[in-house]
Image (tube, rainbow, N blue to C red):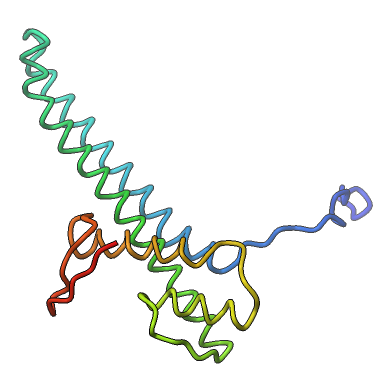
Length: 166
């Protein structure tokens, strides 16, 4: 093939390049969540198939009495995978915001409720207010913390006895 034969149309259009944060999220969170969900689905299918083969001559109620708890177990695994993915997204976001604050050498005020909130407020003060209110991210931190510290409950106590609620 000669150079003249190449189709170069469309090369003058801007090409979107993924930001490192987007790549990080895909590698650490999205891919991991996808692999986890596939493994749960495969395991559930295999287990249910074996049970249904063994109960092929039983009535529907009998089959459901055996498969129902197994299905609920796998739904719990899916829910855990979803909540852990949320924890990972918020944690990766906080890590990247911390990098930006450090890179810009911005001082933060830790009088706010979370490190992420103080860092976002410092970035807003330096760069101007962003398109999403800081309160939205404060709520995400509260959700993440509730998953980590108290099985998704809205109120809990940190190990040192400090109460936390949102």
